[in-house]
Amino acid sequence: MKKDQFIRFLRAFIGDRVLTAVAKKLRGY
Image (cartoon, rainbow, N blue to C red; front, side, top):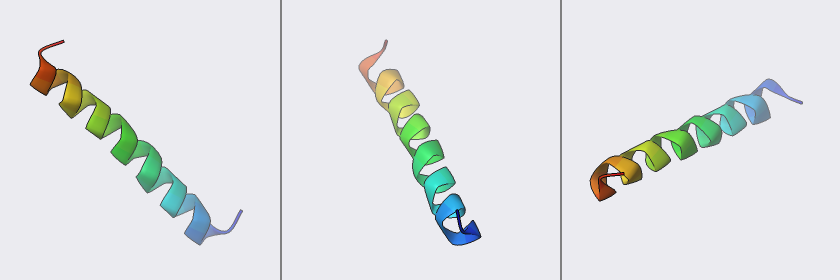
């Protein structure tokens, strides 16, 4: 895996987790 792809994957992965956490907070879970 190229460093470029790895960083992109990491960003998408972390962003996904952050979005999930924010969604849970907004919904009050």
